[in-house]
Image 1 (cartoon, rainbow, N blue to C red):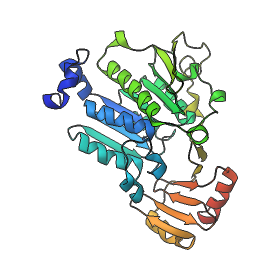
Image 2 (spheres, rainbow, N blue to C red):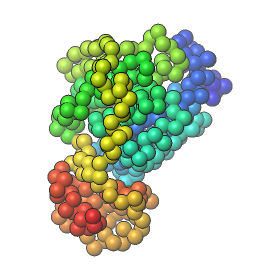
Image 3 (cartoon, rainbow, N blue to C red):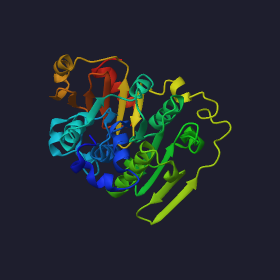
Image 4 (cartoon, one colour):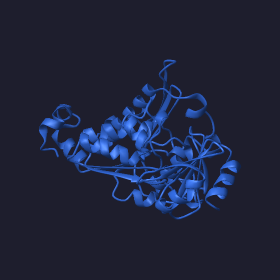
Length: 339
């Protein structure tokens, strides 16, 4: 890859990277968890930078509301109801055909997180909820893999690079009791803050992979691009009782963090997963009496007479869209799918 001087020439002219650094990038494997607003920017920059193997995982499909800030997707992806991981891979492969791009349609959970981490040099956060972030944090610290945290909501952003054995972890700054609050669904989000957060994340990925330890940012950065605020919280010693980086208990891996019923951030959607798999051809037929059905190679979507929508995936997941009421979602699932 580094032999394609024309493709990476401007990046290689940047002295902290150079030819040696570009070769290191070409040998690296990066995992992005989530292919939404942050994930699409992260993937675009890392693929264009010549990371040798970019792997990403996402459970969702493209909807019209994504187009305002999720830069890899377009209206055709919405029409086809493509899984984000599939649509992203199609776009990214056209940007750089010389690297390995791996898009995985799945819900990242305790069942698969450690498999996704195989042969990975660094993990980048493209998620929208702290449940998954704690899962990534615990899995990374268990397997001694750096984790680049990032979050964006409203006009505010936050990011940090956590390195096992060298820095505190995410749990040292944020506990499970603090993870409720503003979401994209309650206060919205503007695209510029997403791009800025993702760019800060990618910079730290590049620094780490080219081994520029001197210039790593050893802090948790927070900022508000609308209200002109920024602050760097310098890393201190880890919390002595941190269950992840100090006690090595990794609670997100031990308590089966992938709950059967999960409310999805910013989506007015409840995800239910109590089955191992679905044959979507069979379920397209079964659900045809329940409402208007749309089937793609990746999912079945039905608009129910009650007003909600069911989206059935081959991996056993069902999204109940149009409600945040878990009881209501369970009721519809039981009625049309069966608990």
